[in-house]
Image 1: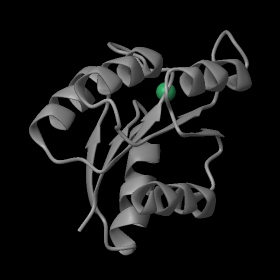
Image 2 (image 1 turned 60 degrees about the vertical axis):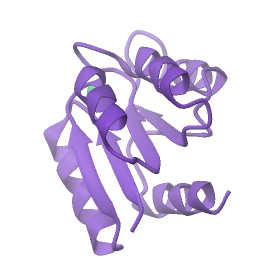
Image 3 (image 1 turned 120 degrees about the horizontal axis):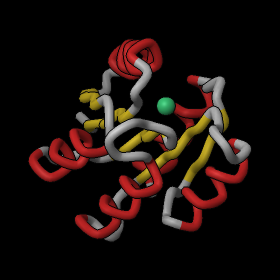
Length: 122
Ligand SMILES: [Mg+2]
């Protein structure tokens, strides 16, 4: 079974995504910030990371950079509702840091699942 790691500071979004992906028979772990997410990534055999961008403690751009250092071919999806930059601005940076897929909030589970499937197939 593939393991998905969800990193988001919003507990509602984590809960929604965990429920949706568990229904699709994925193993799912979650973290409320990049720091915790990275420690899970180091200790577990994570197949796909889905990360928010704006978070306290360690935000998503730095998280993506660290994930790439740990595992250069990590499969990463980033999403954002935006902060001081438009969501599009953050997602462009996320993409340049190596996120293979980026999405704006609100999240479409359908699109997100498709991206996870594509990454797992690649
Ligand atoms: Mg956030």
